[in-house]
Length: 484
Image (cartoon, rainbow, N blue to C red; front, side, top):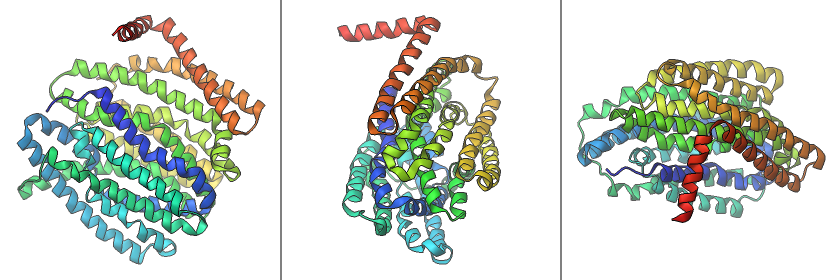
């Protein structure tokens, strides 16, 4: 297959990630006022539960399938068809079993929120049809973007049309779950263009089970330190607090979509490079990626932290002051998440170091569960936020240690200095503006404009005095582009 343009694929995948979070955030000011914090908390709690079933249904196929398809496509169409078929049959077997288990859960265990849990069944059904991993593996990201554009915009339209009051939580749940189902299934219209299902030996179906299980163990651990905080906050029974935490967490994760997009695009490319022995080219990609990740992640972390107080109240309403306080804590995890994603998608998984990755995320998950159990009891939702940041740091340490001798880590981390110093300066400038102007839409607008200008200027100066060769290269490319 023809190699795809990495930059174009990154832009497609960035759009894909943005759509999965940004469009719901467009509806956030509307929903925060129509449904209220308590209903938001109920939805968040029940969604966390159904999402665990979705994770079981997927069984780690997102990452493993992506990598496996990336390797199979290099061996010809017949190999691609066979690999896709064996993977998908394995996936259907696991997903269908999980669907049965979810029905049992809803009937016998869901109790107080049974009706909402039942309406969310389409999230699980949708996993039966999910083949995004195939398109990621062959580096065809445009298809997933166009599909999401269509479905997500319809979802947003439906929310504005049908969700009008606190009595409409069930309508919101139907819209979100059926939207997910349609989003997963509609992509099958494009499958015949690239592959087809063929007859596969039973042994070749189950040969994927062990590596899928290894990846699944890592996914479960990741989900623990991504969602156990909400589950534990839900157990306290204070759905209003959980609703405020949910919005802070959503906005923090929205900020990481650029980094997630880069990782998804680079995983199949790096897998192919390592498989072909192109280590030098792989190292070049990693070096460029670290510069990009640190530049973006520190901008987002310090920027969001600086505007969090004013932004959350302007965006969601006066009842969400706590969301701003929680966001200020959670943003500290953005640079850590950026580094973790880079190590996972460009160093560990492409080099088949699945066990090292799994070990790291499980250590982080255990730390997260323990810290949540202690800190939520002591300081509530803020304790959950602190636990999240610490657990991501633990994962980062345990992911990085196994590859410390294979990569020039000091060279990579040198790129932190400029964005970090620029981010601190931007934070204090923006906070001075916020304290002076007070809480208003105008304040948020001025904070964003001044903060962005300050960050870019300081980084440009730092780059000029520390990496003039890179500056000359960028200027040369821009000059040549302008003449063409």
